[in-house]
Amino acid sequence: MNCEIQRKIYLDGAFLVLAFAVPCFAAIGLMTLKNARTDELLAVRMADAVKEYYWADEQGEIFLQKVNQALKDTEADSIQTVKEYMQGLPEEPCCGDGGRFFSDICLNSGQSLRIELKVDWKKRKAQACSWMVLQGKEKEINQPMKVWNGE
Image 1 (tube, rainbow, N blue to C red):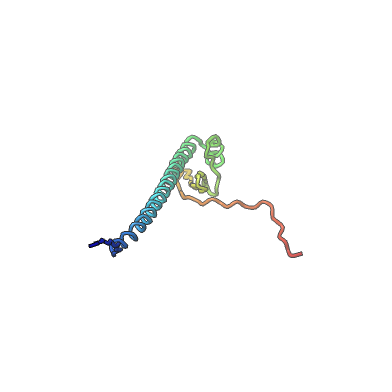
Image 2 (cartoon, one colour):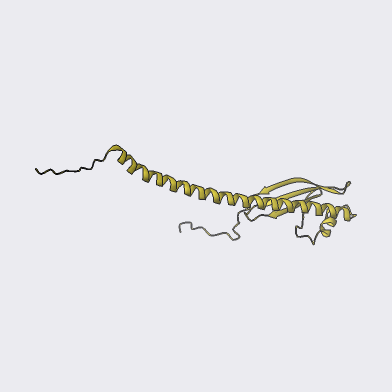
């Protein structure tokens, strides 16, 4: 007698689920890895921005101390005299109205830290009125461009 054993391959449900699940898990793993890299880059950028802000904040505190020292060292009751005294400083102040100093500390992100100090001439001391981050101005076009009018 001739007995041949025939083997048939049966593709049952478990094999089909496994064949479908492995590529799905691989795709999900790759997307998760991509999200992790993006989150890392975002965290690094955020850390750099925070470091830069606190550096500018420290420079603002130093500026406030220098203005107060200039007010103590000068005897005049004029903001122009204090400005002349402070000409050698890297953060040269701008004069404002009513005894106020303005100073902008530039950040690398195109922003600047604007510090506004109000002078109390009786106490010979400056106090911060405003301490805020301003967005950078867009560049203005210096020369107007002629527009074609259809002729």
